[in-house]
Structures are given as C-alpha cells and as structure tokens.
Length: 215
Figure (cartoon, rainbow, N blue to C red):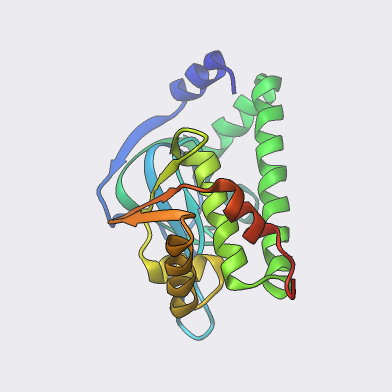
C-alpha cells in the first residue's frame, strides 16, 4: 500500500493500544471492524470441539485481521495480544468504502487476501503430506521473511509464542518440535535464546521445509 493510502486509511480509523495478554476480540462475538496491526504480535486461536485451544495463526506489524467478520457478521476466532500491541481500528463500512475509493489499496488488499487463502489451503494440504519438522521449518522461514531482522547470513526472529503454542500452530507435538530445534542447533542451522530464534543457515532450513516425506 502506498504511503498516501496509508495516511488515508489512518484518517478513517482510530488507534488502540493493548497490553500483553489482552483479548482484542473473541470468537463468536459480533464483528464491527478490522484491525490493522501497527506494532507487536497477536495470536489467532479457536477452541476445538474437545475444548482445546488451537493456535491458527500468528500476525504481526502490517497484517490485517478481522476481515472475515464483514462477511460472516461475527468473529470466527479469538485474537489475543502477545506483548504490547498497537492497532488501527477501522469500521467495516468505512474500510470497504476506502478500498472502493482507492483502487491501488483495493488491489493490494485483494492480493494479500488471495495469498492468505492460498497459504491456508496449502497448510491444510501439508498436514497430510509433510512432517512436523518440515512444517516447523517452513513456519520459521515465513516468519523470517515477513518479520525477521538481520542480514542474508543470519536472520533473527522475535518469537512471541511458547513452544506449546508454536507446536500447535504447525500441527505437531511439543516433543517433535523440541527434537527438531535441538537437531537444527547441533547442525548449525539455528541459534535459540529466550523468545528469539536466529536462523544461521537459511538454505539448510529451506532444504528441510521443501523435502518430501520419505526422502
């Protein structure tokens, strides 16, 4: 989105700040607006039929959340702040009018949403065709590309999720995640610290993420 469109969007919304752990919106409640994340992280969760919380997505600066609510009329998931979050709140009606009035912004939004749906479909498919370690490698590469800092040789990710939450996000067990991270540390692919993961061998992780089961 162009700088001019970003300014226009900010003029029709209002800024809100959420403390760590705050529930920004809850699954099932009426949906009235979208959230444009200005800083910080949020986790998107839903409760399964068995009553377990499942982590569906991790969103950060620049991401839009709550867009599905305009269609369904209610929130399809719970969004919770992970650390301090600043967000722009834009009513659905005003957001739709903005996209219609500024075609460049509309094209950008449609492109982002199309990619998000494609990613969601690929995630569903990958659950039956890849291992937990492969999905974890892919998730780390995605976070590095979208939100990582550093150079081509080493990219650092601020990891706002616990290991249990990260395992839920990629659809694997905590033990599988722990073994994968330990193995990658030994091989020099990553370095880990408190709530941080530094990828020191991007090519190595890409080989793992793209490897098909059985190779």
